Each structure stands twice: as C-alpha cells, then as structure tokens.
Length: 197
Image (cartoon, rainbow, N blue to C red):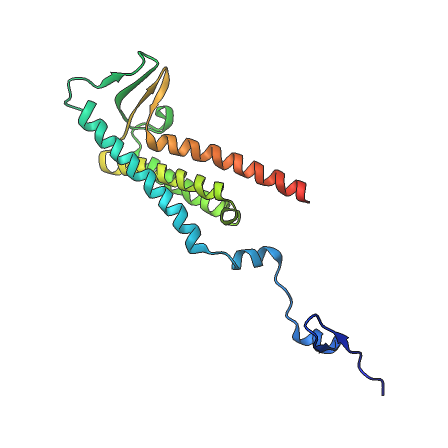
C-alpha cells in the first residue's frame, strides 16, 4: 500500500493533501473579507458627528440672521462689499434657484431619498476613504439643516448674497462642498486603483 504524501506546513505540522482538502476552509472573496472586518460603528460615528456639527452651525447662523435682519427688523440687508457681498434675509420656498417653489413636502422627500441613495451607492467605498466619509457627513448635515427649516417654517432661510448668484446658507455650502469633495475623492481613488492594477 502506498504511503500518503506528507507535506510540511508553515507552522511545522505535517499536512496531507486529503486533510488539507477537508479541513481548510475556503477563503472568502477579498471584497467580503474587507466588508466583514470593518469597524462600522466608528464609520457611522464619524459621519454622524460631521452631520450634527453642520446642522448645529446652520441652525445657529439662521437664528442669528432672524434676530438681526429677519422679519420685523428695520433692515433686511447688510452689505460687506456693496453689491458684491452682503447678508440678506430671504425666504426660499423652493430648491436651488427657486426650483419647485412652494412644494415643501416634495422637496423634503426628495432630500431624504437622495441622502439614502448616496449611502446605498457608496456603502462599500465609504469605510476605506476619510474624504468620502467627510463628504457624506457634509451632504447629510446640509440636507437635514434645510429639511428642519422646511418642516418647521415651510421655507428655507437664505442669507448669504454674492453678486447675482442666488442667495444661500451654511447648509447649502456644506452640500456643495460635500458633493465636490465626494467627486474628487471618488476620481482620485479610482485613479489610484487603476495605477495599482
């Protein structure tokens, strides 16, 4: 009878092809290994903290604007550089550039759907990129800040006036910066992956 072939293993134990075949578990795909080994609570905490900071700053700024140049105040515009830069109180009932004016609940639902879509589309890449986590936090925080206005007031308070550009606020700025950072981070990561491959 032929003896079984014995192979040395890295730890010094003898391993036969038969035992290796039956006892060694099949490794998970690399993508699944990465997902399982993630610290998801930490990822969620980073995104959550960034979103909360944006919401707090946005609502504080809007509170100051209301008390300073809001309804009932003698002036609703305070110029820093003439017509180029100023603070001006505006009640925006639509989205950016006045789109869908007066449709508060529709805008609120769209904001929620877009936020969830971002989370779903980027759920695999988000934990591996600090820039992507930061951008998601900015976008979610900005969306929540404006959503609070729509649900509480029926409109969004805008107050930053730059030339002929439509008035905007801290939440709008966070969303814009977040989207730009998201696009830049995604393109950069894709470029690095192509170089590595």
